[in-house]
Image (cartoon, rainbow, N blue to C red):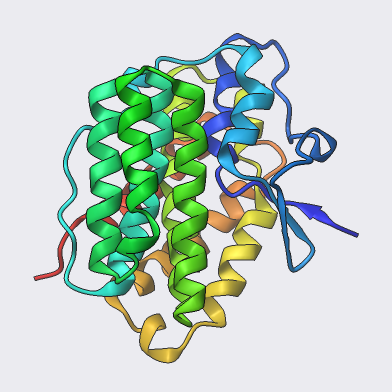
Length: 266
């Protein structure tokens, strides 16, 4: 049986927490027929499809969630891959906030980080398209191009036999998305909104991917820290009744993870 695990759904699902009386606990797979992919019996839709399903539900104040700091490429490829994932996730937040200048900065950052891990050629066209869409305030196109940048980067890594780095890109994006969603839920706690954090399958998916990684990657300082953080997150997001205190704990752990990704090791 196929399981639905939306890697970036945390960003889109937050749209339901502010205005919908009973936000959905999951996204209907039948509404995501076009670009969703299947990995190990896990249905992984691309971000724009998720946003498209949930647009009509309204949105929180994404301006308060958006981060404008420019990332500095870290020294090793594992941390750079994680950082690239967080930057792409930030792009979706910037699009939701309709912050054109930030979207353009993110388009350039995606290109710079891709160059740092050797896949620049795969995203040059996407980066330019993201910047052009932001100039034109074509937010739907900007979403689509961000989706494409994510897929192009991951495919390029796989072609270079860097499958595990591709997984780190996804993990970085999910962590930033979780932080963003939890920030929204914390600002206006409700039981229905908190239920969106109930994502045990996501944790199982990423834990399995980390456990299968080469020893040298698992020993990476940032990867190792994130693996420990996932261990702490698992019981929290597996709870069927997520309290306000649990939301605070999830936010603290996800913030710590994103900070470690964005901080260069001495």
